[in-house]
Length: 256
Image (tube, rainbow, N blue to C red; front, side, top):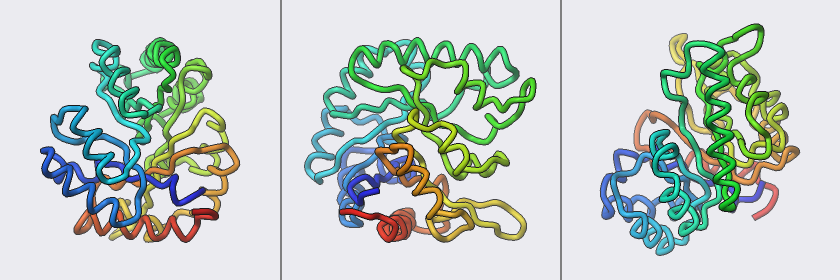
């Protein structure tokens, strides 16, 4: 992992990126922390050209996104144009719509749809990535839902964006799952898990209980390209949380 591969997930700063002016001020802070890339997700309705201009102004690459399921199904041509303009290869689905979660038929249908979308994205030089939460670790016929997605979707067209916190919250081992997904994951979400009064809580990298040496080594071994810091909720200033996580990951980086 190089420092240049560490990115900030803008969903962490969603309360501070509602307008172009807020996005500009926030990305200035993100760059000052040391990040060289961002994942675009959770920002306000800002024109894509303006988003690109602001990112370029602050020297931040757009490494990945989260796009709504509706847009992926009904506005894919525009999604493709946006990502090509942003020089952003990875198009992410941030969560599975509720109607697919009830049982195995829904997971199989989601795998089919992801493959269909991924095929079109691949033809445009882009990649489809799926982001998990903990519900995908419910088992159907002896296998976790996420494993069904992995097995039923076509590897050439569907990648994964594992979230370390949610894998662990689902009762699974993040390191084992990184190795299981293997070459199908080029973007990973990194967040720590702490225990406060017997409750699992989101934590900055290094402030929780995860084995980050092993997690980063597994990512190196399997060819992860982008190490994206996300924190769904922060105990205080989210910019400070991003800074704490960046410092911790920088200490694990083996190159600039």
